[in-house]
Structures are given as C-alpha cells and as structure tokens.
Length: 252
Ligand code: PEP
Image (cartoon, rainbow, N blue to C red; front, side, top):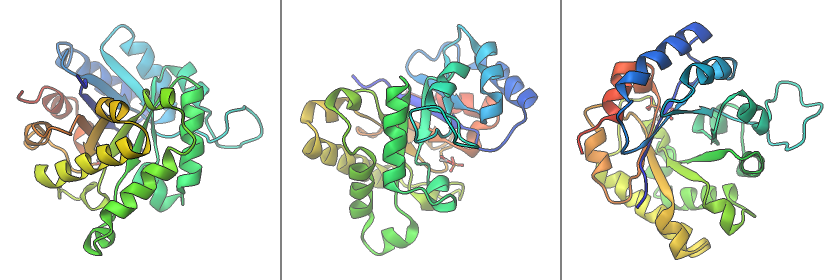
C-alpha cells in the first residue's frame, strides 16, 4: 500500500550540462519503473533545465533545500519553496545531515522549512538520523525521536499525509558503511511507532520511510525486502545514470 520512492541526491555536483545529460541518460533506463516514484535532486541552478527536459517522464525533481520563509522578500541567498516549484520541482529535501552539521540547521529551522515546503505544495523529504557517537552512546532512538518531534511540530494531520521521512544514519552517509537491513529495519519500525504515538496509527501506516546511507545496486534489494523500508535516498550512487537505474530497478 506504500508506493516505494527511490530518490537521488546530487548534492553540489554537476554543472547544468552534466545534470541534463545524466537526466536524459536516466530517462529511458527507468521508463518502465512503475513500481516506484523516481526522484532526482539536482543543484538549484540546474533544476529548471532538467525539469524542462524531463517533462512527461516518470522522473520527478526535488530541491535539496528551501528557505524557511513562506513570503518572498529580503532574504539574500535563499530560494523559496514556491520558487522551486516554479522551476519544476515537486519535492524538497529538508534537514539533510550535511545541512545540520555544516550549516548549523536546528530542528526549529527545519520545522519552518517543512511548513514552507508544504505551504508551497511541495512534498518534503525530512532527513533524520543519528551520528556514530550518538549510536555508540546508546541514544540513537532518543535523537531520532527528537528530530521527528522537532521537525514535524505543528503540522496538521492532512500535512502529514504529504511528507516523506528519510532515515539516514550519519555514520553511513558517504562512508561506504551501510546499516545492515536489520539495523535499518529496527530504526524504521521505531520511527513508525513514534509517528503512530505522536499522530495516529493510520497515518503511520501510510508514512513512507526511506533509508539513506551508502545505498548501492548490490545492497538495495536487501534493504527493500524489510517491511518498514519504503525506498532509498541515494547520494554517491545516484550520480551516474546506469548505477542509479540499477538501484531503481532493484530485484523485487
Ligand atoms: C545522502 O547524502 O543522502 C546519502 C545517503 O549519501 P550516500 O548514498 O553517498 O551515502
């Protein structure tokens, strides 16, 4: 009942020409992937060009971040959620661990971005996940619970229908060290339980929870076989069309 989502986060890689070339190479390779939603997140400057070239295809576009402000105005350097939508995005990644770590994004800031994204009609992909030190200290669940509560503050039941969560243990991002399917499943099922406690059982059954952290063609099927893993947010392995397509077209 939950449609899987496979999303590629291109981070600060690729000029416009390379973004378009990769998107065009990906298009035929995933054209028959009716089992899931396919999303790519190019840099802001490439979104419009990529979206124009993918019009009518089954590949959707995500921004990698958005401004916390809902209203346009004097916010130098920011890109509003509805501007992303205007450029062709229908999703936006919010609260990625790189933004939390390197740009000091707090749950409060991330929560404002969630509200801004939803108000603009974008589907936010809220990233949460513990660091290695937090896992080793035995507080991974407490951290993740705090990120869910903080990130989703004051969202309504109907808002919650339109969000996606990505569990990305920080120690697995870009490190080649993937959580085992069992470790990921354990946290995904915890996230669904927290969501059910905080919101409601029905919404938690519908919530899509993606796993992120060194997902590759050779480990996606094992992850997707877990009952609470509904897709993947892929960094490094999404940069090359054929590799990403192998992840999208995982063995089912
Ligand atoms: C990410 O940045 O969201 C990510 C999961 O990266 P990687 O797949 O490279 O670990």
